[in-house]
Image (cartoon, rainbow, N blue to C red):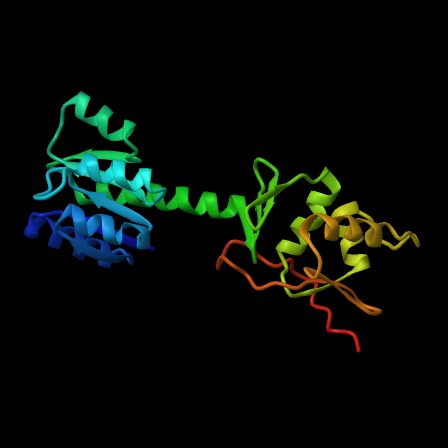
Length: 236
């Protein structure tokens, strides 16, 4: 995880960066609001001082959120009034810590922000333009929302969790319909046909005498995990 430390006090910045590096984070330091705006999108978490020499930290937060940058922001400042805390959080900060501070508390708050990022990652599957929100049960293809009934949603989820892998009809029957055997139905083929109409041609490949494969490359590393126990080889 990358942490961007935005702090104009060199000693404080050095202290934080060294502590984060020791905790296993990739920490980068910048001293101005302009640099923060330039580097924020590349960071997972930002530790942001508000009293910067060029741009006030609140303005930095506003600009980032206005541009759609969703980097987790932990404000670290000497502004201790309740009104200041409320202002920071209302403008888009994810947490607010007042100086002087204990590094252990800052580290705990950064770890909480990392857990929030990981929770979002587990919530979404994204493969080659197909995005699935597992919590809200929404799907979009290249940014275009599509509606899927429950069974089609579950079938697509199986494909998204194993992009490029051959999935047999028996495997799909077990994962989506809960059947431990093939009852001789063509329900898998029918539902794959439904999905093809929704997500577009060329995305789900039929492998003769084998099953089906989602023809796509993973778009987000770690956003999905392949099902274990399904490693069929390509049929000739």
